[in-house]
Length: 519
Image (cartoon, rainbow, N blue to C red; front, side, top):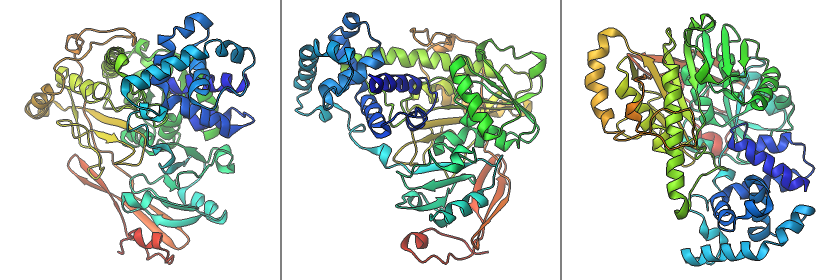
């Protein structure tokens, strides 16, 4: 019973964005880690199919068990290799096995397939999660990138220098590189595991997908500033903000879930964060005019979303669930817009990052577009011009991320900046007209993300702006290989360029493919 109870618990936490599957599995201290990880991932992959089987057989009503527990039990019973344990749950499920198997068979007949795997969408049939690189963010509050590189080299890892193109992130064995976009990010081969590594346990490294590192990196709050993390748990982005701020200033972090906030507190303690002020509070109930927030100029908003961009948490809907799926997206978009509107009410706000781990336009471009239409005081500014995947037209100043184009989980980021008065007229001509094409009808702002809402156009006007993140020039030296990243500005645009490096002495095929420019 312990296996299924723990798997159901992890599914619940992942859906609430408390942490990644792998982190939750390893932190669970379960005796058979591989068995638990496989069960959770496979259950997630078949989630929409399992839910349709459960609903069509009215299993929850007849067994009085919760959905996530039902999913893991039904997966093992009718799709997996059979229930291996479960005690009373196994006995209960066996009474319903025939009906559950019949429901699965009807689904295959209806879709004219013979294998369970064929019920999945083409995107879910690919083992993309196992192919993504392992990203490791160096926690600069506790160490330096150079020291982390040296530590891994002493452990037998082969450092191939700074990546120059996306193909350089396709690594094998114990090779690793510096990321081509983020200076504090190291990239390892896909199945490299650091959950038991000393640097991870000591908080010197953070296991965080590259796309998830973008919001804090692009917001780039200066040292000593006042920053607000609106929906903060599980805390990786919060710790990243603190590192960028060098633990100086004030970092307000809110989350409505007390358990998530407790987990976040532990993570921040391990990461050495000291500038935070945590609050178990609904961000929508925070008073923007409160005296403690009078100096807040930067906000990171990563609200609840569908999670459709996470490799192990796709929300592909079966045909019978399409209408329900559409209503859920509308409600989520309404909630997200409400959060954005609230964020823009802070009187001294200069920049806000809006991000989701969703691939759906309803939660991404349409939410931002509705804000831009309603609020001429904010604008979008181009982000990372060399980034390979842009927001959908006309909002190409935003960023998207995906397993295929950026070798990350699916993600969306927009950076919005307060507009100066003298450029309001320019904003009207450059932004409002194209944005009008993006949101013909979107849901209105609402706190309840589970109800269908009215069109977004009826909500309070608020708008946003985005700006490229300035990066500090830094020099990294390790094993005779020097790397520099230099800030380069051209008006509102900014791009990162690797500076001169000495020619790599490593003559392996991988090292030769990683380009280094000579001053």
